[in-house]
Image 1 (tube, rainbow, N blue to C red):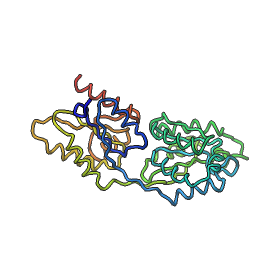
Image 2 (image 1 turned 135 degrees about the vertical axis):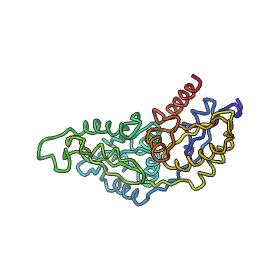
Image 3 (image 1 turned 90 degrees about the vertical axis):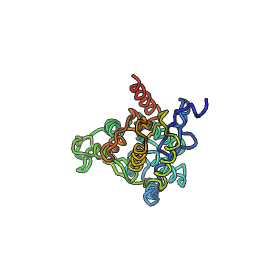
Length: 310
C-alpha cells in the first residue's frame, strides 16, 4: 500500500524509542504517522540528587526508618528522569528498597516504561493503577489500595496528630513543574476522612517547555498534508504547546478558499488536554480519547468518522 493511499495523522509528541505504540498502531491501520515534537524536557538534577541520597542512606528500605511507603508516577518524563538518576545508584541499594514498595502509575504507556525500570532496579516492587486512566481515578485507587496496606489504628499510642495512622508513611510523587493537584488534593484533602488520608510529598524531577521551532515546523508539515480531498488528524498529548497549535490551525482555516471543505481534525489524549483547549484556547477538539492509549485514540477517531457519514 502506498503512502498516497494512507491518511496522515500528526502526533504532537516526540517519538518514543526503541518502539512507539502510536507509530505501530496507526501504521498498521492505513495511516501515515508523523511525529512533531512539542515539548522539551530538562531534568531537575538537584532534586533528583536528593532522591538518590534516599537510596544511598537506606531511607527507602523497609523498616521504621523508611521515609516513603511508595512512589507515584503520572508521566513518562518523570519515569525517564528517575531512570536517569538510578543509572548512578548501585543495583543492590534499589533492590533492597523494592521490598513492599508499591509503584503507582496512570495509563498503559507510563506503566510500560515503569515496568522496564522495575524489572531492572526494583525486582520486589509491585506496579498498580495502570488501567485507571487519569489522576482522579488513580487517587481513588490509591486511597483503597494503600490504606489496605496500612489499616487504621485508633490506638492513641500509634496514631499521631498529623497522620491518621502513625504507621502509614507518606507517598513520594515525582512530577513535572506543571501539573494538576488532583492527586494530593484527593489523598490529603478535607473531603477525605481523617482515617483514610495519605500524606503526599511532591518533588519536581523535570521541567517542560515548548520546542522553539514547533510552531513553524507544525505549520510546514500541516501545509504538506492538508488538502481538500482528505482528512488530516492531529493528536494532542499535552496542554503545553496548545496555544501554538491553535494559532496554526486558525491560520490554516483562514487561508482556505471559499467553498473548500474542512480537512483538519483534532483528537486529544484525554480530558485534561481537551478542557485546556476549550477553556484556555477557545477551541473545541473533535475527539477526546476514552483511554489515554493508541487504542483509545483510534477508537475515538473511528467513531467520529462514522458519525460524519452516518
